[in-house]
Image 1 (tube, helix red, strand yellow):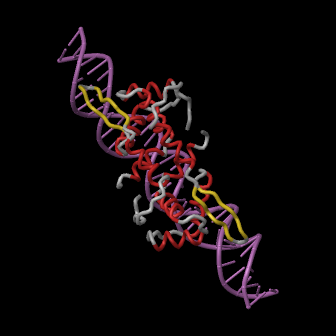
Image 2 (tube, each protein chain N blue to C red; image 1 turned 135 degrees about the vertical axis):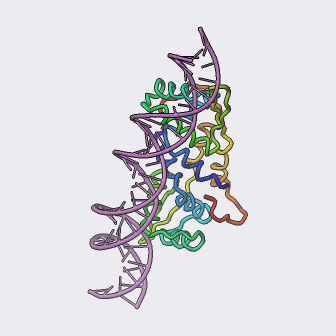
Image 3 (spheres, each protein chain N blue to C red; image 1 turned 45 degrees about the horizontal axis):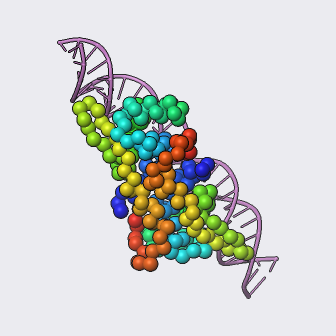
Length: 102
Length: 102
DNA sequence: TTGATAGGCAAGTGAGCAATTGCCTATCCT
DNA sequence: AGGATAGGCAATTGCTCACTTGCCTATCAA
C-alpha cells in the first residue's frame, strides 16, 4: 500500500495517538471538543492550530474521517488502516517477497 | 506500556520497516548481511553505521533481539510488541480510559 | 604478530516536523 | 448588519532525527 509511510508517520506522535484514543472513546467530535479534552483530561497545552494540523495528518493517513455540517466539522476514527500493520509482520508470508512496500 | 513511544518511533522510518521485512524473511542475520540485502534487494545506499543505528532503535523498541557468538552478532525479529498496536484501538475498550499511555 | 573481518562509539551536519503566531473565511444567532 | 463561533491558511522557529565521517575495540586466520 502506498500510504504506509503516512500511516506510520501519523502514529509516531504521542499527541496524535492520544487524539485517536479520544476519538475511540467518543466519535464525531469537533476540533474544539478535541482541544478541550486534550487540555482537560491529558494536560496537553497545545494550540487549536496544533490540534488541527495533527488531525490533518491523521486524515491523510486514513485514520480519521471528517464530515461537515454547517460550521461544524465532525471527526470519526477509522481503524481500518491499522490492520495492515499487524498483517505485515505477524503473518509469516510464504509468497514472493514484495519490493519496497514503504 | 512505557515503551509505546519507542515502538511507534521505531516503526516510523521506512528503512527500519524494510529491515524488519528482511529479518522476517530470514532471521539471525548479521549487520553486514543486512547491509548487503538493503543494498542489493532494495537499492538503499546507506552506510554500515546507519544500519547499525537503525538496529539499535529497533532493539530499544523490542522489535529485534540480538545474540553474540564470537565476532558475530545475530539479529532476530520479535513481533510481540506489535500486538499492542492492534489492541489499542481495534478493540473497543469498555473499561476506564487510561491516562497517558504514550 | 600481522592483517582481515565484524562491530562499536562519538561528534557534526542537514532535513523534516511539531508548534506557535497572525490573519482570513464561513456559518449561525439576535 | 453585527457579533460570536468554528475552522483554515501561511510563514516562522526550534528541535528531533537520520546519516555520515573518523577512529577505536574485539575476534579469527595466516
